[in-house]
Length: 416
Image 1 (cartoon, rainbow, N blue to C red):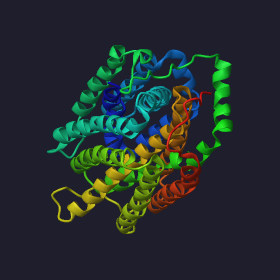
Image 2 (cartoon, helix red, strand yellow):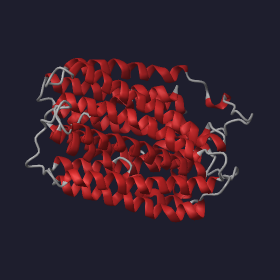
Image 3 (tube, rainbow, N blue to C red):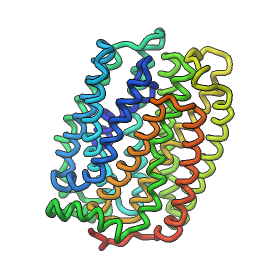
């Protein structure tokens, strides 16, 4: 059910963003609104783990899901009334706050429910379900726009209805305090201390588990790479119906990417440390393989000369589509690995909520920076080069943490 909340809310948002420019021809307005969303997301994510502990995950999920409905409604409004850009920006700011709440609740649940040997599998199942939402959204878009060169309002209306359904699902979820794991153990009860203690717990987490800092560059890169893929590659080169197809292919491959890396990270024949190094090595190979391939295309066009005219019926499209396939696999593997590393550091839901807050806050800061850079029309090559450098550096800096902090079993008594 948690997966389907994200299927219907963030999944639909991902489908819109994946179209490049939110499906609009004015990509600057879309880039600025997404920058505003990620900026507020970055700030509030540091504290929403505390809010989640106070309100409980179900209420936190409901409030968080509402923001996605508002954003979709604002996208429909600006489609009908092109001068309503300020409404989109306001809705994006509100969405940033709501999204930080939703992902804090999601992070604490998806990492706390499984046993230690199931964490990779649970993350993979969630990620596959969430990305299936983007696949369904992309399918809706492709079906509506497959015979058109213009984006239709029906796509936004369909997305809006689905996000409203997502708002209702948390009301039917079980209380986490009543959950029992498959090995018979109960999920550790989330404590509700004072607000002062909750904010202080951010400092305590850094003090007691400083290795989390080594994951910050990896966190920063986690949504940074979407901007080049969606706006500077797909939206720059392809017409609207082909962008819809690209979007469908991309999110479909994310499902397979999350499942594949999840299987590697939960292989019972290997110790957890070996699995950690295996996942890290796979990501490193993907970084240099995929980005080296992408560089071959990027050096052939600039922002000034790019025209979104390529169609999926054109000769040579298949090669460009294969890059999208591998980008989809890579994106899911990256985020699944990040969650798995956090889960390997602790079993305490309260600490995991703080870790999740750090993750989403830093991730959002990176996204805000690069979306603003794109809105300012920085050269495509600059954005591409910074993306490649950040992903490579994120893995290298995370390696000491993997070496020294990942053990074959998490400590049970590690509450904050």
